[in-house]
Length: 158
Image (tube, rainbow, N blue to C red; front, side, top):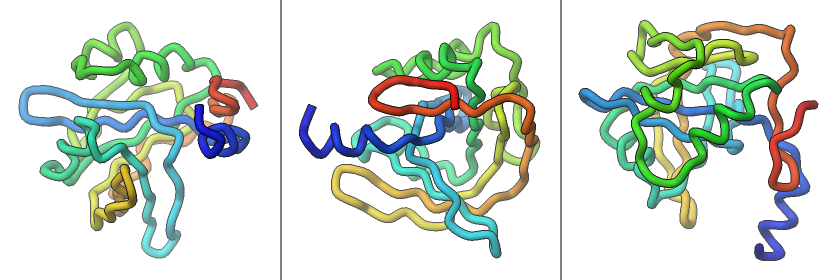
């Protein structure tokens, strides 16, 4: 682990799963680099590896979903963090989920919130791409469960 990576691991970050429908398949990945950018208009930003398959798909599919995970969903976060390209439909197997009405993307239920969004801008940034997206809908918000957080390389409850 580089000194830079170790330094950034000291900063706690919320954990989300980004999903997108790509033709007949579904693609998804766990991220901890998701943030609010603007309230008016409502915008979020997701940072993804430029070499990752999800970034490739998001360059051709503008609409996607972000499920913000709760502390009881570390296993789901781990499934979506696996290297390779397993279908997101297999990764959500056994977990409550539905398709977003605006994006047709898989939305994981039981988290703290879920958003459906549309990419408005892509900014190259080193070995990553920053996807800025307008919020089409807030699918749900549930403040009862605690959010899942990544800190020092591990998923942790708040």
